[in-house]
Structure formats: structure tokens, C-alpha cells
Image 1 (cartoon, helix red, strand yellow):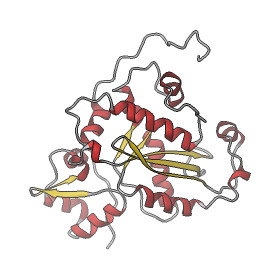
Image 2: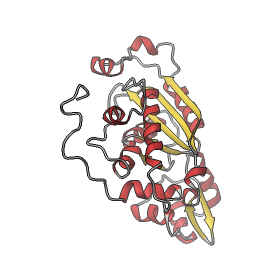
Image 3: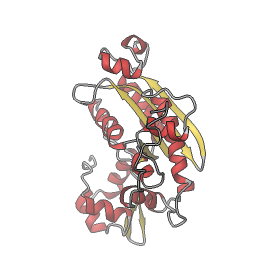
Image 4: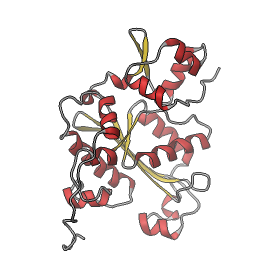
Length: 265
């Protein structure tokens, strides 16, 4: 028996991250094979635990310092998953102030349009000895495990990777995710929040190569770390952090771009 497709509504997600879901409610989502389906979900990156008779995301109980965050970036030869594919992927595992592991790979492809070549510097010829999309995604899925998926504008990277997994015959991602852009808007004052602009402002990555996956991951990791340093003490768990990144009040931006009349414009 296969797990049902995860189609949690906003209410269920909120309950799993806060007050929990009862067994009858969870059965409505998963059917009677609870243990089997929870195990299948876990294989897709989502771990639910039972506590005092209710089910929760395990991230509700994991302190930020004890969590492993997988910071990810991809480059693709277009934005349409039906027509395009990932051409480069990179990720860093970050835990308690330290980088504990890295993953990086080009992906073999047959076509990259001139705009993408100009943006990334990646040519089709550069990918010809790279592993296939299927091979790279199998390795990435093993790498990320149940970690929290972090990216700058996370929906694009998360959805593109998840849809690509489905495209090669695997199950989609179910990992809890966090957007470093949303988090930065609530923790760091800046005129703009694009990754390149933030790097110019705070020198997050001293040797950036924008629109290359590992370089952008390094920048995002430093940004994520900077955001964590500003948090109030009452933000303790991963779910506290996710909630803060989505719902806390955004910081007021400067009215004038500080780089407007400088060489860094």
C-alpha cells in the first residue's frame, strides 16, 4: 500500500506545527495504515511524532541549535519544469553555527539557451561529463534526508527539485522548508533583499560568483547565520523559526538606497 499524496490544507499544517492532530483526523489523511504511511512520509523527508496522544511535526520539538538545515540552490536551463531541467545543484548542511557537509554537482543536459549561459557561465559542453539528472537527484535525496530545506525564495528551488523527483519516478519532497529571504526581511534591515544586493551590503561571501549554485549557497548560509544571530530568545524551535519567518512583522526598509550614488550601485 502506497502513502496517500500529501495534500495537507493550511489548517492541518498549522495543527501539526502547533497543537497537533488527533489519530482520527490523521486517519482521514492517511487511511488506517498509519505506521506504514508515516514511514513512507519519513522517506520523503517528513517526520511526524506522537506526543501525549497527538501527532506533530518533529520540528516542533527540535531546538534550532540541534537542527540540521540543508541550504540549497539550483541553476536550471529555464523556469518551466515541463520544458526545462536542473543543470547545477549545490547544498550545505548547517548545524549549530557550523557547516558539517557539502553537496555539489553539474547535471548533464542537451541544451542551455544563451540567456542562461550568460547568466550562469555554464555551457552545454561543461555538463557532458556530468551525471544524469536521475543520478544527481538520487544522491541529493540521500544527502538531504529529513533536514529542513532552506533557500533564498525557497518555493522555486523546493518545487523545482520536488517536481523533478516526480519527473524521474520518485516521490516528491515533503521536508519542512524555510525561506531565507522571508527570514531576512524580518531580521535584517536592508534596502533590497536580493541575494546579490545583500552580499554587497554585508559581504556575506567575499568571493561571489552569482548564479552559480555553490557560491549562492555559501552566500545564503552566511545570510541565514546572520539572521539567526538577531533572534529573540523566545524563538527556540525550528517551528518557532518557520512561524517567525512567515508571520512576524517585516522590518522597515531605508527610504533611500545607500548605494545609490556609489560605485556599488
